[in-house]
Image (cartoon, rainbow, N blue to C red; front, side):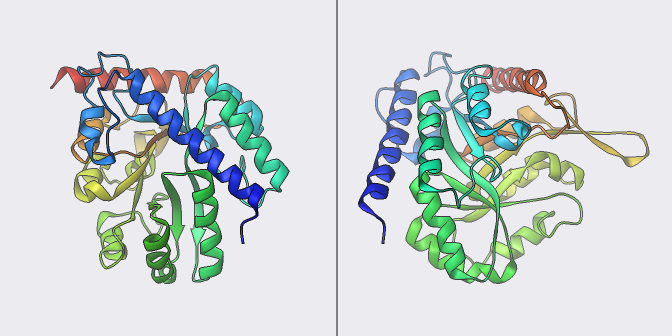
Length: 302
């Protein structure tokens, strides 16, 4: 049973989440609050007066990019240096098993910084329905749009039932060459007979490492793309691959954004910077500038 205090906290979190969404809509100068299915209109920069440099995408950060910073500093960097309002939290920054006082502190600091948690992960799902339920309860309390996950094959029956109850998508994350969800046909087989809210978190860098074009992944799965980890990879001599700043690798970012528009993607566009830098903020800023340039190119082509 949820305690009255915890229930009030959940309601406050939900209200803050909804309020931020309404404010974002007002900033885009749209005539009305749009339903989820009207995402194509949100992405039309001409209707938005060009005010959103990210073209209506929920541009955020996978907080793993700032893994060398403690939680509060990470949030301060998002709201200050990067001017980013969405985050996909990784467990090292916000453990699900946090004490109630710690949970409240973290939520309060995000609200004060105007940072909204959109997704969480990457988390495992196993056959244990009780353990899986705890993840969904946490996601509901946080007001998340999706859960990035690496589910065991024997967890899907449990997930079907939980998805029907909670309506929070599970986004399967691909982990690169040799991982169990590294190819389109493998993912197809895993999800085809299961709930429509089991879909993908498209990690563009890991798909590139697996010699799979992320653009084709989005085109194939369309409305079952619930999350994106946006990162770039460059092919080097001898077949080696290296994570790079966005725009300096082999990712076809403009084509990717066009495919996501066509799919009416409404999840978090979570930039994830993998390079080992103790202070990666300058590199992340370059990634965000590259994203803005790609958004302009997609708008120019309308």
